[in-house]
Amino acid sequence: MSGPAGRARPSARARRADPARRAGFDVLRAVGERDAYANLVMPAVLRERGLHGRDAALATELAYGTLRGQGSYDAVLAECLDRPIDALDPGVLDVLRMGAHQLLATRIPAHAAVSTSVALAREVLGSGPAGLVNAVLRRVAEHDLTGWLDRLVPEPGTDPDTRLAVATSHPAWVVRAFRDALVAGGRDRDELAALLAADNVPAAVTLVARPGRGELAELLAAGAAPGRWSPYAAVLAGGDPAALPAVAAGRAGVQDEGSQLVALLLATAEVSGTEQRWVDLCAGPGGKAALLAGLAAQRGVELEAVDVSGHRAELVRRALAGAPGRWQVRTGDGRELGPAVADGQHPPVDRVLLDAPCTGLGALRRRPEARWRRSPSDVAALGRLQRGLLTSALQAVRPGGVVGYATCSPHLGETRLVIEDVTAGRDDVEPVDVGQVLDRLLGAGAPAGAVTGGYLQLWPDRHGTDAMFLALLRRR
Image (cartoon, rainbow, N blue to C red):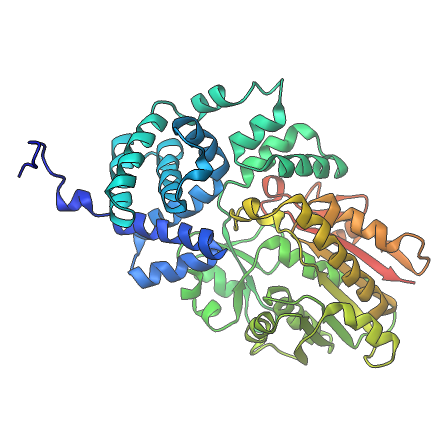
């Protein structure tokens, strides 16, 4: 059938967005409109639409890949538009970004990437925006990503930060912060490109067999492979981890190996005297608390898990349901624990884990949208909270006890500088060499290059984990 001008009308199929691309677009809109996290929204969208197999994989790749590459794609799109990119309707911009991802970072043929994007725009935005999408994406398709980079940014020797920021889709301030952290950790600044590239590789699904509830052998029998570092870790090759009986029953959980090592190292550090009580001071959503509960039960120690958010405290209760030993979960501000111990309203603590609220820049593989939501001002604001929580933790722990200060961020403003500021001028706190504790825990199997200056700093490119930081501090 022909239209008024004698042109063939697009088929009904061509006018409809395919389910995978519509699902990817809806996740992007949830991230943009509601500040949602893609890793929380995507499973619900897939279930709601009944997407499985290749369709589910495509929807996931389109949403996550678009979020990871947003900085690069925006730079390219800005060159292909006749108006400022900020003037675009957010929905139009998301369709363009997802189309650019297909053109510049996947093997989807250019004609398919353009036509499916136009169909998506027509369905969700209307015919007018669909025409804009068609014109802009045809311009994007004129070069590959390397070709666009050569046109957009100087050669590496003249402005390395700008090129790396665009090429790896990171804000420039994050690029600079990561370089500073690498140098402080004893690594060559030339390794920065590898670190940034690793942020754009989806993280493997890592499981933890929770002590006292599950066995690693059960996870291996289900098809998982042993982890690299944690004796409780297994890596799932694919599929939904919630479908595993061990995960569904709470005998195992999803937890990055870096997160597992933080809890294990705190539990391995030497303390003097008899132990009675451990505290997880910022426990939500409960992964580390669940691991610590099993270790504490083996020693007859009680675990107290605290979180300031009632919702997150409820997530901790769910994670601990069925855990062995004695444990309790309560809602409260971690900054109040130290004064409560000093006033005699709370008994002193033997070990405190403080996994402090942070920017999450160490987990960009899992939450790619975080790089666009954070700014340097967040580091300063969170720094005040981190210092207050660490001061409270050191006040709560008894002499001879240990505090583990952890962040899922390598930013110096959230790691070493916090430790230095809080411990400056104090003669009642001494650092514990994490390297010695790591050797005690894993021996020859310890991750190489993970400890510098007595601190643990893991890296996704070198260790395959989130960029977790840990300092251990002992009260004299």
